[in-house]
Image (cartoon, rainbow, N blue to C red; front, top):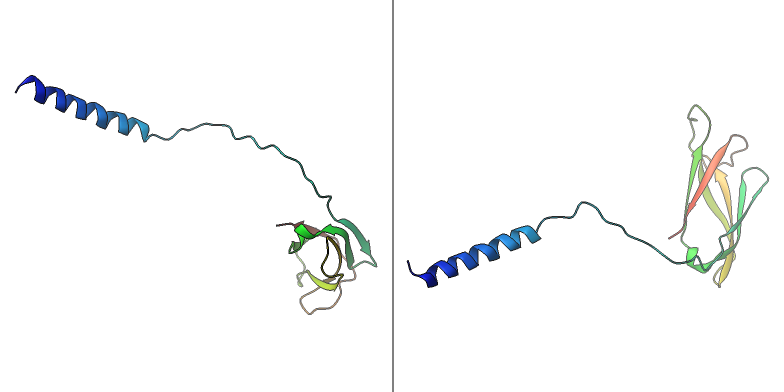
Length: 120
């Protein structure tokens, strides 16, 4: 073999080894987020037991999901849900009223529940 072939083979091996080393994943890193919330959240008001009002909500939070969870130590037979009963419509800010109901659609009159609102 002459020197030209040895240098070509050595160069190809070095190139192959460097690409294999570059394909390794990094196990640690840091991601930083900066910014600010530019809209205030909704104001809430629980009225007459099973009625919940959200007032002054920014239009960007329209389409939020409401989840209900009972805080009783034993799960109840009827699951609780929220049903939208009033909405002020379109605009920069809106108000909504929800009713806490059971599986049959009847208002829940007793119990302890946590309602979680998840905005898009």
